[in-house]
Length: 243
Length: 243
DNA sequence: CCGCTTATTATGTCCGGACATATTGACGGC
DNA sequence: GCCGTCAATATGTCCGGACATAATAAGCGG
Image 1 (tube, each protein chain N blue to C red):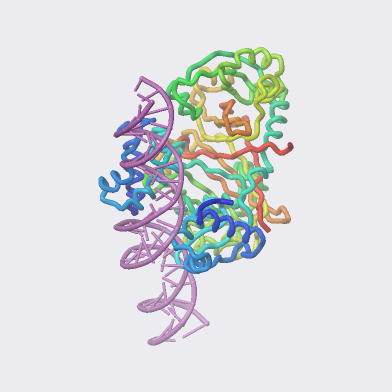
Image 2: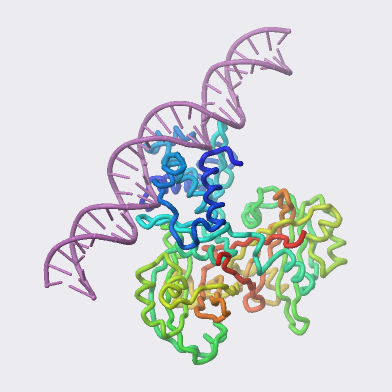
């Protein structure tokens, strides 16, 4: 049970919505009504509704009121498209061909890209990823960054081209992936990567950054993958959560 | 730029932090000092700091103060999409600015892009999408294709810039989204789109194709969005599904 | 100098008020 | 019945005040 009034009100409303007390698509009582009902100031009610809005449960418009948009908070566990297990299958289907293993220190640009502190030390493992054997060109280039103290990981990675690096980290260092934050952006291919991929320097590419975190939310691996345009599609399926 | 005091203060602080006026790791002036400095109430200053905290620029602790954690926001238009409901909020946050409404017949190229039959008739609604009003450039360009028989949808779309088109389709024609198939690829900006976006023709872009299907899996809407590099990040979170 | 206690400080919670803004509904006129 | 105008309504912005809480700094004693 939360200690603040607004969190208690938010929890109560969340439970009532989940229980169907307020149907999806319907309006909640107004702020003033909730204020009277809970014996709290309008300010406190607004803080509670801010929280519900942040959870995606409600939307709010002037004069209209606060509308229920979902019966439950988005269930992050329910991404039907891409999950950790999907990534395992991707790893098995796209063979890794290690090109370089080096210890690097994050300068400003790398820190920006990875979302880490300048000066952070990483072991970087650079690989080509191959897709269909019938295709002459690799599907992408991946730089994986793990803690510099995992210095002996390199040989294991070379020896297991079909196994996710995070899986190897788990086996050797006991860090288990609980969650991966994935960011997708448009980018261009740097010259060295383009050359390795048989593509033009500066050509358009999909950049996928993935941060691998354990159950304590500590990030222990970051990967940055570039797929040249035309060689890869990231597919996913979004489902409606409430009836 | 922005119409509200707290957004102006937040923008000003964001710029000062980015300019190095407050170093990463250092403390901002206290809420009371900022209140005096900007001639605003502490409440308004707190709203501004809430926004900075939401951007990941600052952290705040009692007695300690407000500490700068990053010099620049992560890509501002980071979008977390795991469900249809997330798309609803995206639609509300990114105003649509309709540029063109036309009836089109899919030639080979369009059929390939949309995954439909050559010759299929569509009503195409072309729009700019805007993010933060403080930014001079739109975040992306969207072409939405709906059945050509929905000819009167156009005016409703123009009149409701914050509402998803699929929601308008549901209201008017009773087709309800059950699932969205999303494909993400690297692409380049065609000349006309680049011009409208204030970008270079041929510049790298993220292309997101979404197919909106009802409960019977019938696709009733397809959208194709282009986001120029540097203006948008598509985020998602992958969870482990099994124990 | 070090450790402990207490006062001070900066953010967090919560109250209340007033006005602005967007939207809907009611009403009147044609 | 339809359209236009205006009033009412519900959220959004912003002011101010008071007290709570967490954390640091200051002061004192050994």
